[in-house]
Length: 174
Image (tube, rainbow, N blue to C red; front, side, top):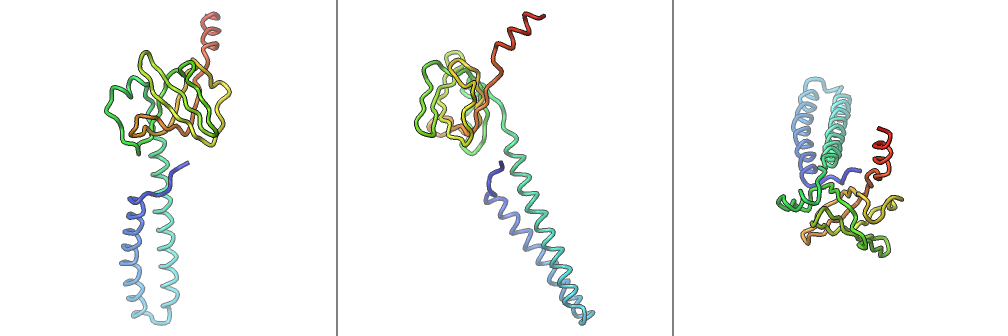
């Protein structure tokens, strides 16, 4: 799901409303002077058009938030370690192997370590969805969330990569 509208989106909507008011009200006043009997009709038509434009801008703002969330890039633990630390607002996907002995469950939170070679990333998962059935030690996981300033990855979604048993069957059949 998309996130709530941020301050930038709210400012865009307010500026748009101001611009609509600058156009609609003088136009309605001009029409009222030109045809005094139809003032209510013109005002109603322009008000409905203004409300329609406001809804369009609001829906476009929501769509831009959704598109922004869809642009989460997949990185490995090594790539995340080598790159400069991204800001906590940016959503990331990180893949790696679940380190044996690192899984600990505490209430609704699950903490574990993703590893790739010698590099490790501490992950805390606190999501609405239950953990996948294939979530276990040495399994390949893809976590989605944000990297905290303390270096702990706060995951909101966990996806397990295909188990290697499928690879063995395809290689044996080839």
